[in-house]
Image (cartoon, rainbow, N blue to C red; front, side):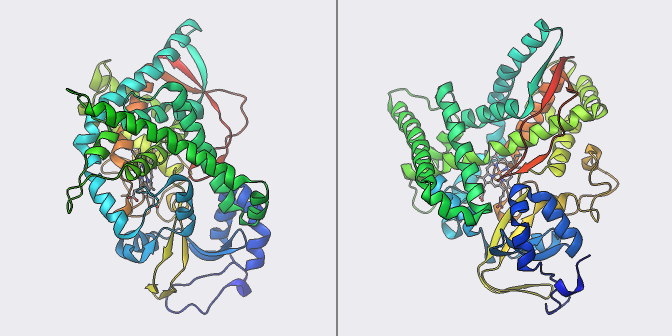
Length: 470
Ligand code: HEM
């Protein structure tokens, strides 16, 4: 527990807000930048579920793993909370798509784009997903067959390639050449990595400025926009050809969308912002979730076998289709449990726009919140044996129902992930097709896999799993 003198007992009402002294935050800022999860876990274990601290020793922030407070901020009083200047700072590089937008303009865009993500619309993209999964796994199966029935693959690299192709082709259909797709993925990764460093180590800003790092990353962002602008322009030209039938992809959905009030389409710049944000939000998140799932399945072969036997009974050897998914619950539960253990969005932030109170806790305007999803997903008060991988927690009728806002892999409230249905379908399909063809085994002798929480929670470095033909 915290030292008595470090606790702020002046907080009014029943909600008690301990405070980590600034000097302690300063001392730990380097450790926090290098490896935040152990520092945050330790802080919450010492002080309680909600605590005030200084990020990087500089920015005062409230860190919480309290489901009630999380629900208050994301849902019940969401109008009072905007994304913080950190997230908004990201728009310097990626523009003002749904993820970085705010206020009435965000709402207008969300209403416009939401129908494009309805279940039926996502259903229309599942054939494309299946096609890309099959295309990606076929050479691996061939290599395994010629290599004695198995091959080792770098899990994160494979899942990143697969999910980037799925999202890029769901947005742009087939119009993107492979080399440019790789460049696009590389640009997004480099920009995100720099953005995270600039936030986590704010004291390095003068150094970054001196080294021209901001300008360099602005130039990368400009290159990214130029690439996308060219593809959007090509699509618009192609659509104008006589007899053209535009593809049924997410870019076309953005181009066809009309504002309810004006009947007008989005400006080309807006289409670009929204297409880019879909690529960014829909890529790394699914890649990381699937990478962690591979890690977990390789260590829990009995869970993989449960998925395989359910699949064998339902599909009798054929590939899964969208209609089969509801009868293949084990795969979905494994995906859900992997996202509990390793939530891709491990933390999101908000700032109070006006004074507020929550159960007696006074929240002054400007208060910065770090909603710690990883902490919620591992809270012993809401989960039995939180460190264990138990997909059956998510089975209907499981002994302990999942408490609202103790499980928030896709966020909550009006800003709930717009791609949730897309991502769940994609991840269930990847899991099923992979396990239909292969057993997943751990490759012995690798260093322990640790977590690297950047914007999303990824493994530090990569690791290998062996895919053995079934
Ligand atoms: C495992 C996969 C995914 C996870 C864990 C995930 C998680 C999240 C979370 C937590 C948020 C809310 C952030 C906040 O409230 O600050 C969010 C928002 C968003 N996600 Fe996802 N996401 C995933 C996949 C996708 C996919 C595939 C797409 C696009 C096809 C997508 C597009 C978006 C967009 C556009 C937003 C912003 C929505 C808004 O604010 O209106 N996501 N996502």
